[in-house]
Length: 236
Length: 243
Image (cartoon, rainbow over all chains, first blue to last red; front, side, top):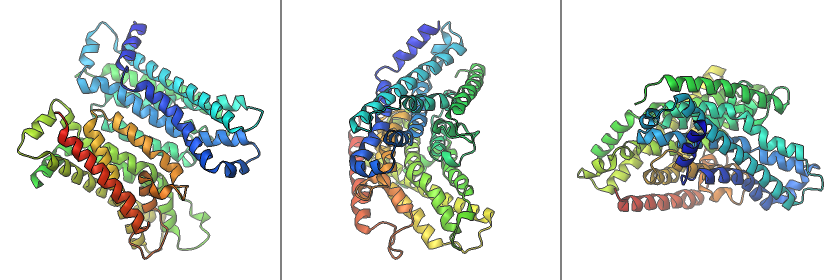
């Protein structure tokens, strides 16, 4: 059942620019640095001995913003398919469980975001090579900056999907999402417990891995809460 | 015209608009509370520190993004179940519908800006700032930010009429707003980038005798110019839109 439900979700996102968005988000983060380095490469090269490290840090300054915004846009897109056309009735009328419907949506979003993160890693590597930042490519750091923010942001994904699916009016999840983006942007002054801080990989102990575990753990809890809430609601 | 704006307001009132409006002061309030005065090396700068702490995220990202959300919300009723048909079957011209939606949006952005001002003031009261409130400077910042959203709101209204969903206009908004984070660091591009203008106009700088914090030429050409282009494009699109 799960496979076919996911197939249905993938068909719904066809030709809605979903894959384009995943590509655009990944490219956008690197494109910012293309502009940045394109305009003032010489200046940026004098900023640090470790050119790769400095470049990855620059890339990472936009990653949390892009991920949180991407989550807000994609969750709203995916749930508006049903919300706007009153199609919940039709899906739930099928012999499928509501839990599976919710799981299928979450999984599809998680896959799209993962591919986006993967693409971002590739673009980051390619532009870094083009810039000629040095012989030694810090592959461990590259992997960390590409995939850790993704796992750390799963809590935000679970939360936004919850709000987006239960809101008739998409203004609510979007406004919450915009506030979340501001939180993500102000990550350095946020307390560690706020989920929007986690994609920045900052924490008290300076260990990015902690954010990954938090993202997975809180993501699972928020996912469960969202799924239970969704299954208990009336379908209008 | 007045009646049209009234109907727009009635529709909006039931669209959870207060939730959207209160998000702005909420952000400013939280941002202001993070200010640490112990770093202040000169007396009398407390108000400016509060303003600087809240301004960056608020003017750079929040204001452009939320103006798009407002624009989508004002078109929400029409996109549902043939609302455009019902509205345009009334003896109104499309130009007037467009204008009344636009004016109402700008009025709401102004309310958000005023609440932002109130949020700054209450942060100061909570933190026990004893300096006099620098009213003229903060007024300039608040009104300047409002003027800078004129073109952005026009573009978002156009996109919101064009697209049914919230996500599509938001995507366009994000694509243009995020580069502003880089643009404000650049003396060459910053002044010409419309999405960087809310920040430039809310940031305290420049000649204190000018009406706003950016030169008049920049205000007229960049903000005024992009406003005319976006408004006209939206207006023309709406005239020709098949309902």
